Image 1 (tube, helix red, strand yellow):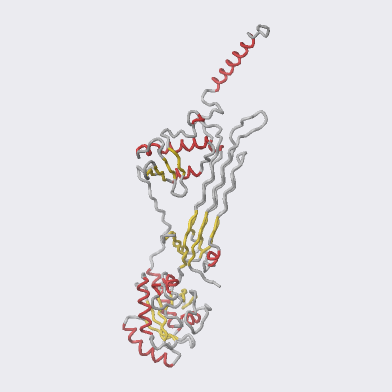
Image 2 (cartoon, rainbow, N blue to C red):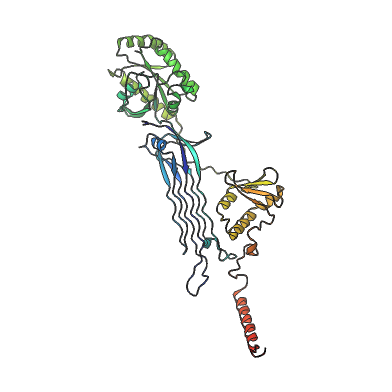
Length: 480
């Protein structure tokens, strides 16, 4: 059974916005009391948050599909729909978020770090919010915007100060168990350690973490053994400790060649050249192990390594090793640049940026891409002619019609708004009046008269009444 997962593919979907409501207030003696449709609620976001109590991505391995709740639709009486609930997903410290192409979206280090993996859709406006002096009682509302959905990849890179690296069964798990309170599984066969183990070490006033990275073998950087799965856990460590087995029973191995092999694999993986190295000659409690350590120590010191003779069984050399690692960690922390305050990057739009693009795709087909046009299309109810006319107004004011004409579009050409998968396609009419003819002049609402002053409307009604009375007075029922 899988107990540790450090890489998962996750499908996240934010909540859709609720639809706006088209409603007219009605009560006795007020047949047309005005629009009172409420707005739809906003959907819920999908949010990743670093939680120090989470150490694995196992939950997402079993349940890779996560979706936030949708916003509720608006109702009459100016009642807005409730917002959807954000879906908060806890992840371990050191989680890297990537898209399907491998581009890094976020590097989540530090308790409480937040990343919005999928943004919710906005709620649609009700007809009360769409009312204006020219359109007093809209007979339509906007639909809720769909929430963002996408596939992401989560990779866990262990956050530790010291990484213990070496061949399988070199004694790394035993060493971390005596240096700290960690209790890893220990046995005398290869690949006992199948997950990175973390331990906290205290040396004087210094406290640091040590990671036991699963055994590496030749070809690890190419995916052999467990290498590629766990080499990423070395990336964040400040100090690398080579644990060399001085009591190996394999005749074709020796500590120096083991060190060269591991260094070659680290070099192929890349990015670790400047990390301080420490060499631990392990298992010196065995007589042959101590003899071998005495032979190879001068060669390793000549290469510039700090070398320590250690025995996890007899606890020999552990104090010296822990204080040396503490000194190296403190030096690495001091050399690390101070954490800068959160920076807000402002990227102003170009002066001539219209917020959308028009491109010609084949004969008689033009595609419009842009945040506003695509959002407006998703919020339009195409079964409502008035809503289509409202969309035409918005696109025209944005300048889409003008840009289509500049791009060479002619009446009857196809225009697609959106991407390949979710585009809305229609035949273009240069005046963009499709669906708006029934409204008369664009922007006016004939259900409520607003163009004449109140006094003038009153005089007109009185004149109409007098004319009707005059016709009645002149009427003779016997004059047939």
